[in-house]
Length: 106
Image (cartoon, rainbow, N blue to C red; front, side):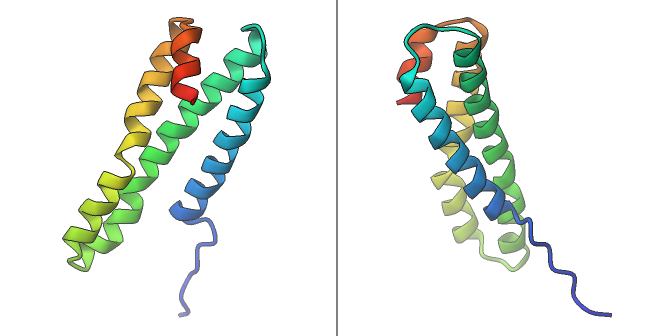
């Protein structure tokens, strides 16, 4: 039986989500008044950051299986910001705190 290759890896998903966040931040910066589109963009950013955070453990699992504990912990620390920033953005969007959303988007 041959090896099964998954073209949709966690790293590829992280890259796509990061590019989507950059595009959403650019569109969010163009908004003058908070409206439905502004809320959708901010919500997308929050959800994408949380999705990025969820891909971290998938990437690290293979390294931990091989005993690369230091590399796994370093990778977790490098991407820890995504989970905390995503949670802050989510609470700001739900509270309609657009000043906080603007500060977090920067």
